[in-house]
Length: 172
Image (spheres, one colour):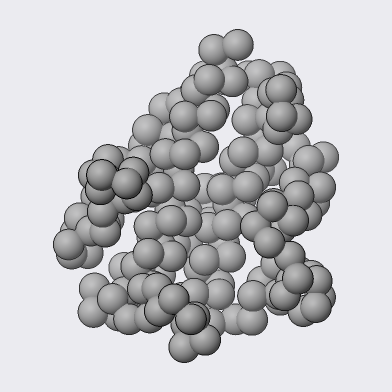
């Protein structure tokens, strides 16, 4: 992973590099979960999250990024919560909502959704130019972050972050 001295990911220079990073981290994530049993994927770690919960979290945020950033749907609608709750919620609150919503799902269901979400992201990105990804992700964003940042943060960087967690949990 290409990172800056501060540890943040360096943004890809072009679409080919973006797609390569996404594929590389997706493949590494798939290797990390390959061969794990449903029991191994369902046992909570010290923080209360199982491998399955990590995977459900990944697909939820990947779906959020796709529907909100790429398809411009209202963020609260994408999250499936009322607008006021969304406005007041920080990332930890949203993650807790997602955890509660997904914790009782089956491993098979979570894995199927993760694959489907990933395929949809790839299909959407395939239709976009790199110039489109270099536009601001939202006209309302006071930080004027690029759409590319939202894509990287919710795909390859997010896969890496949770793969590391999953690999630690799988070793326990």
